[in-house]
Image 1 (cartoon, rainbow, N blue to C red):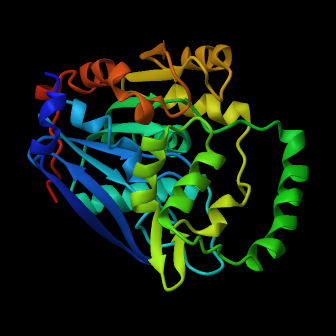
Image 2: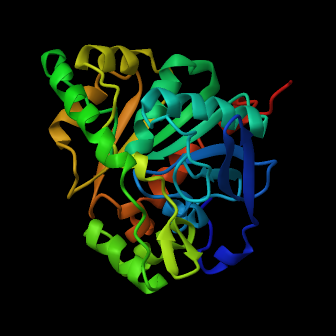
Length: 303
């Protein structure tokens, strides 16, 4: 069933904190913990608020936990000397599901969140029963011959990154404007939502809470051959939702989707952040997919 958008405030919403060796991973939970578990994974420089407009439109039979990736939103940054890349994020998911006590769950992922979601589902297929992937299907592949040059360019960024100081904005409004300047596809309402978890007050203004290191180009690259192997290892049904004005080539996504044993792709009007700008367009399809065969899944950990 679809949730009544006029009763969004009736959905129980709570903050979640999961302890990890370097601090904590924060999150936002919608619904009752007795519902079917869904882990929501946001995109680059976003936070758990990315799903604020979509999740209230979904079934009350779902218990959705949207995390702030490390270095984003209210989550702890990685330790000094550590960096952000795909394999770390896959390990983050293991910490999260262990902390939540889940043994089997569904995934709702957007953009950057899609890469670790797919990698996790391929590596531990017994843990994931459904996936909805918004604006993405795989980590971005790299030609093997291009990897040494790309890594060299990344290493050259390190010095400048360590010397970079955080910008202090005079007002919260200035932060919202900056978000919109950096993400031209966001509506003002969407930017305001992201600013709620993505900024913090300091003595002389406001700063963004994301770790500046998340802007570093990845230190880990996968070839198309490796990515194809991951896709072929996925056992759960996947719904891929792409925007008409996408940041990814739709034909390429369609081709790669054929490698998954059970995948469906749809294209909806909108841009890269359609799930936040105009969630009602894709909510019915997301809801239908996540509710498939729920009675057959046992999701609570026996540990």
